[in-house]
Amino acid sequence: MLNLVILISGRGSNMENILKAVKKNKIPIKPLLVISNKPNAKGLAIAQKLGVKTEVVESDGLKGGNWEYDSKLVSVLEKHRITPQNCLICLAGFMRIMSPEFIRHYKGRIMNIHPAILPAFPGLHSQRQALEYGVKYSGCTVHFVDEGVDTGPIILQSVVKIKNSDTEESISKKILKEEHKIYPKAVKLFAKGKIKIDGRKTIIS
Ligand code: GRF
Image 1 (cartoon, protein in one colour):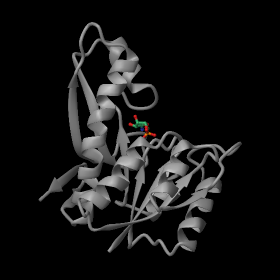
Image 2 (tube, helix red, strand yellow):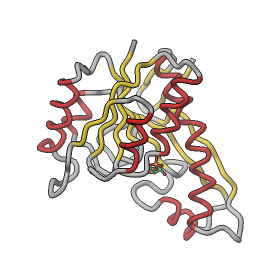
Image 3 (cartoon, helix red, strand yellow):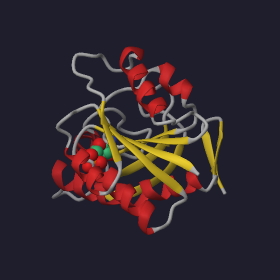
C-alpha cells in the first residue's frame, strides 16, 4: 500500500479532512506522516489526535524553492522509509515553493490544492484576486506539482458562484467547502492507480 504524507503550514483543515476521509471511505493508502514547516501549526495537534505521526522541519530564514530546505524534508521522509516509489505527498496549505530537485525526486507523486480555477489566479491570495477581477465563478483545483507555481497537470476542479455581496472571506469559505470535497477524491483516485499523467493532461480512468 502507498504511504500518504501531508505537508502543512497552518490550520490544516484539508489535512484533517483527507485523514478522516481515508479512514471513513477506506481509501487504500496509509496516512503515515504529517510534516509542518511551522512548529505552531494548528494542524499538528489535529494530526496527532487522529493518530498520525508528525514532524516539524522548520523553514525560518530559508528561502522557498531551495534544495537546502527541501533536502531536510527528504531526510525526514527517508527516516520514515518513504521513497519516491511508495508515496503520495499532498501539499495542503504548505506555504513554500518546492525546489526543482524535490519535484524531480518525487516526480508525479506530489499534489497540491489551489483555491482558484487554474490557470486563473495562481500564487497567493487567489480568492482576493478573483474578487478584484470580477469573475462570476471561481473555485478550486487539485493538481500535480511541477516546477512552476501552480502550473502542473490538473486532476480535479470544482466551481463556486460569486455573488455581488461576496467578500474575500465568504468566497474563501465557499471554496474551502469544495476543496474538502475534491482533495480526498483525488487522493482516492491516485491510491487506486486511476490517474495517468499524459503531458499536460491527466487521464482519469
Ligand atoms: C487552502 O485554501 C488551500 O487551497 C491553500 O491554503 C489553504 C489551506 O487551508 N493552498 P488549510 O490549512 O487546509 O485549512
